[in-house]
Image 1 (tube, rainbow over the protein chains, first blue to last red):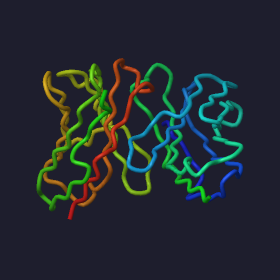
Image 2 (cartoon, rainbow over the protein chains, first blue to last red; image 1 turned 30 degrees about the horizontal axis):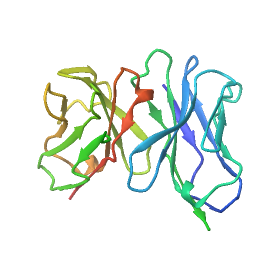
Image 3 (cartoon, rainbow over the protein chains, first blue to last red; image 1 turned 60 degrees about the vertical axis):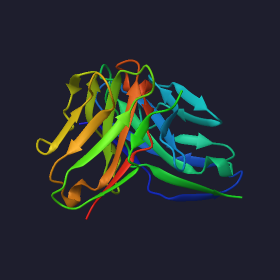
Amino acid sequence: GNSVTQMEGPVTLSEEAFLTINCTYTATGYPSLFWYVQYPGEGLQLLLKATKADDKGSNKGFEATYRKETTSFHLEKGSVQVSDSAVYFCALSPPGANSKLTFGKGITLSVRP
Amino acid sequence: NAGVMQNPRHLVRRRGQEARLRCSPMKGHSHVYWYRQLPEEGLKFMVYLQKENIIDESGMPKERFSAEFPKEGPSILRIQQVVRGDSAAYFCASSTTGSGTEAFFGQGTRLTVV
């Protein structure tokens, strides 16, 4: 079946540090891949997505590239801010079945001033 | 336009009681999804509903769990005779289309069974 594996957390960084959050997946065919973010006290929000191999999703300084050969979708940001402190979820949606999302466990990012 | 509203935010139930979780979708949204997040796990799909119809309930436990999305009013996730293992965060999402990727999520209801 489909699954998403995220690196273990939590992650604590200083402001302006470089961020990488690893995500790998298992799925048949070519799923769509997503990163969702949950800020404290709020619901999940779509951060970025990629729908085919080698696509790069980007938003708010975050980027992730769909790597079919390594089945990965790692999230990166060059310079994190305190306001990026949140829980980040990697997710996939298999082709033709967009009503279901399979999520990773999520990882908590804390950014220190 | 208010976002997806879930209530209550926190719910405590004793074993054997019933839990009713409510989800009011965004205005104009007729598609609702429920996900559950158990401790130390990711969100898992439970059920997908349109107005008055269950489209996909492949993630729902076979017993004690039910969901509805009536023509009027919020979507309800109902858990009968709760057990400690039902303790989790339950998230609702809504969308205007059948694509879960364009869904907007609520803040979740955290259910604790004591």
